[in-house]
Amino acid sequence: MTRFSRIIATLFCAIVPSVTGMMAQNAYDEDPVAAPEAVVAAGNARFTVLTSRLVRMEWAEDGRFEDRASFAIVNRRLPVPRFSVKRNGQKVTIRTDSLTIVYNGKGRFDESNLSATFVMGGKKRTWRPGMDDSANLLGTTRTLDMCDGERTVEPMENGVVSRDGWAVVDESTRPLFEKVDADWKHWVAERDGTDRLDWYLFAYGHDYMAAVKDYTKVAGRIPLPPKYSLGYWWCRYWLYSDFEFVDLGRQMRSRDIPVDVMVLDMDWHETWDRSDGVVEVDDFGQGKGWTGYTWRKDLFPNPANHLKDLHNLGLRTTLNLHPASGIRPFEDPYDAFVEDYLSRTDDYDGPKDFIKEDGSKASVPFRIDQMAWAESYTRKVLRPFEEIGVDFWWLDWQQWRQSRYMPSVSNTFWLNYVFFTDMQR
Image 1 (tube, helix red, strand yellow):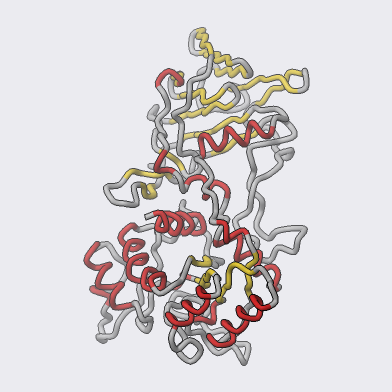
Image 2 (cartoon, helix red, strand yellow):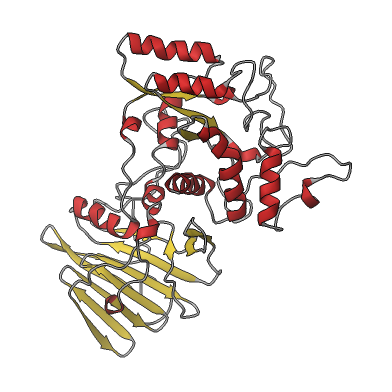
């Protein structure tokens, strides 16, 4: 990766998660249960009129519907817009001031039984399931790694605006937020496997601003990043010592370069010898040294003083994390983490008490979607770094996309959720 793209990736991964990720962070203040007056039931289908141009459309094989928040949609309790309902046998017609939805009541949604009609540019437009959505103006992408300025390696997700005037947000298979009796307030829950459709139709024509504004009403208000995060960040993939890094900050200050954040890339912790170009793998199949939680004492003999020196220059500091390889026995926080983790759960992946048959300690797999693991991780691994001056973390996750314990959960999304929510806590 080029130096420039690493800097951009740092900003993107650490401060600007996916759009849905950022919005869903604020789930605590929202109500996922819609006002009863906004709901129209029709057999195994349910429609929720959220605005005059935004309607939730559900179909469930078992006729049971979901009122918990999903990863992208956390609030459905909106002022009920004016609308009418007309029934003719199984057929139901819903009319708002801007939109007409017709469902003939016969089975799973498809192009033959469901339609939505609206006016755009003085002409009537009709949407049906399965229509080509290539005119969608797209949203965001999971990562900017390897982005060359013109294209991304990862595909862009669809957004809520389109040249066709309609867009569909499909939450049918996305995980849910479930209320928990803990200060996390909400935790991830997988869907039950029932055949279901959970769609949100945005029929805003070319009124793109209104579509995005109403999206924030259902997806949650977007947290405002701290002011310093909008400034200049220094980042270089380089083997710095504490003296060199602080001296670099002093030189920038002496030259009136308005730097706000100093990024310590992965060599702040123990890494492997890359001089011969051979990358060995660890016991989780990852390159040795990518994951690390132990300061390199030869470069940073007194980390607390180092971070204090940076703060005295008015600089914020972030450390790079590649957390895919969990917590390994040689790491400084290993013992404290294992003791705390075992006190919270007996549902863990590894030998009893993480002791192998030969008496040696076993590595703890990465499992951020388990609340007990995340609780011990934030308290016993991350917090000691924060207490000596680490301001926030660069989540440089480029490993497997989905959780190995909850396959429907995106590791990128859930890491963002856990880290952001932990900062709120």
